[in-house]
Length: 274
Image 1 (cartoon, rainbow, N blue to C red):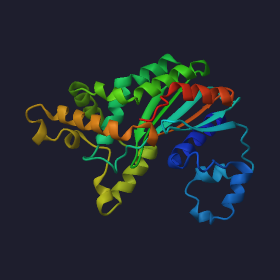
Image 2 (image 1 turned 135 degrees about the vertical axis):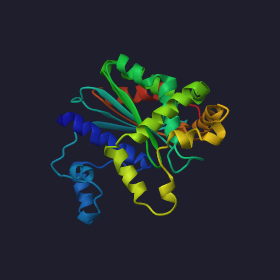
Image 3 (image 1 turned 45 degrees about the horizontal axis):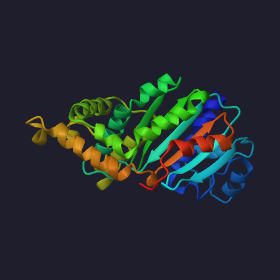
Image 4 (image 1 turned 120 degrees about the vertical axis):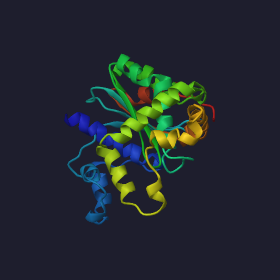
């Protein structure tokens, strides 16, 4: 639907500019068109930018930008036309910052599994998913508006410092197989774009990727069945180093008053520096 498209575009734009928020407010409609008029049209990176910079694109959302003492950067939008509450949490773990191929992707899987985030989103009349890119991992979820507080608390719990304690060997082996199964399937959307970029690259960039069973559980480490313990240990270390809120950005849009929504977000996440 048109509303779902607008919500998806908004969250994608905020996530793509994760390291810029809240220093650089997102421009939409006429303001963005004015800024874009100074840029060569050929330099506009995607149809997304052309849509957002269209003067006829009228944005009626009410925005709030907050940075918590823990360092989490938050942008919320109260949107009376939205049907659901939708969020995207970006953390600083990606394919370019890992000791072996696929570790960030595996950590994404372990985080979803340990927190049972998919089932919790279903319980809140929504869905949850995640993806790992070159420089970030993004967790996306939605729910019925009345459950937005509960969903926020579930996402906060999923990335809490103690969450990595649940990364055990059996779960790691299972999720490594799931990562491998994804690698064998045909990618689409953003995953396809990443794979095409990697396959066409010459040099170090070509060495990074989503991972397979062989990069995560190499035979030389797994011959005695200890490969999953090794991978789990690396995943716990990566989680503790890269999932801190000081490196995270959260975008939320919901049919809720912007001040109330911002307050709900702040209250759901730890305030003390991590």
